[in-house]
Length: 219
View 1: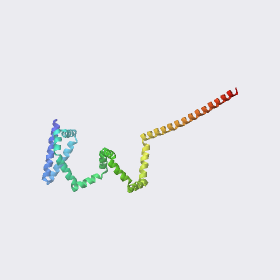
View 2: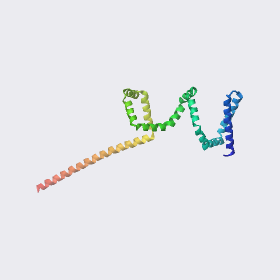
View 3: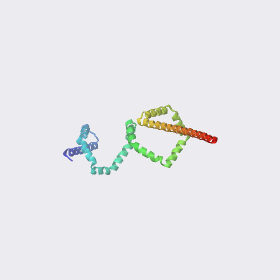
View 4: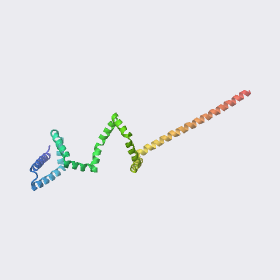
């Protein structure tokens, strides 16, 4: 560890202990609060520098620090649980959960896990039976019918179809499928034509043989 990183660690330790002292005092003095804000801004500026980030990264990767974090895991869990169950904490997280950006990040981070869970459930016989019961429920079927008839669903389907046709991969697959169908249809027509030609040749041969037989009879 070089001198700059050592100084940063000393500074960070001093800041943390200073914050703890201010919290114990209850923030009674306005001067103390001002000093705290100035120190906080200073630490933020230091963390934005390359030396500060490198020192912080080194701290986080040290085994002693990771072990100390694991030892304090129960304390962290209790702190988080207390925060979540408090009235202010619940209100805060309700507001956060309603933010579109937060919802998108949560959905993206859990997408793969949700897909894996769904795949496992689809292979579970008990889950399959439950899904069949739900789908066969008259009320559920009626809701599906109403959904299919709704203007919103039709617009969504139209948009999905248009997007699919605009997709180059879908266009290539559709073109290959059409070409394959044309080849199969053309091959059948050619086979029929060749079969008909062979039959006509066979009839001509039979006629020729018949004429020869007649000539032989005249002899």
